[in-house]
Amino acid sequence: MGSFSIWHWLIVLVVVLLLFGRGKIPELMGDMAKGIKSFKKGMADEEEKAEDARTVEHRADETVEPGVKAKKS
Picture 1 (cartoon, helix red, strand yellow):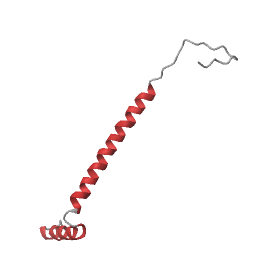
Picture 2 (cartoon, helix red, strand yellow; picture 1 turned 135 degrees about the horizontal axis):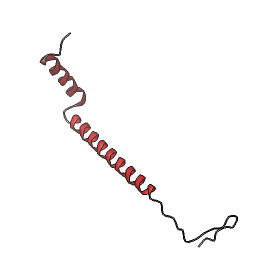
Picture 3 (cartoon, helix red, strand yellow; picture 1 turned 120 degrees about the vertical axis):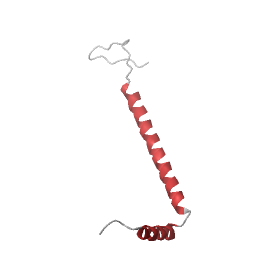
Picture 4 (cartoon, helix red, strand yellow; picture 1 turned 90 degrees about the horizontal axis):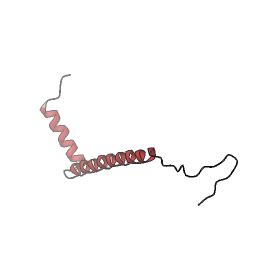
């Protein structure tokens, strides 16, 4: 049981071409590339949202005494 010869690879290639057709393989690869690109874009969007969530702004102008409800403006 050694490595495959050139004839083995040619037979596999012919079977793949018969199953999927000549135009279907580039279409599948294009769809895969689009999926990878959208995955990377989604990951970048998640990082931006995480960075935005880390910045917290608060107002120290209004102090609220314990037991007293704050007024909504």
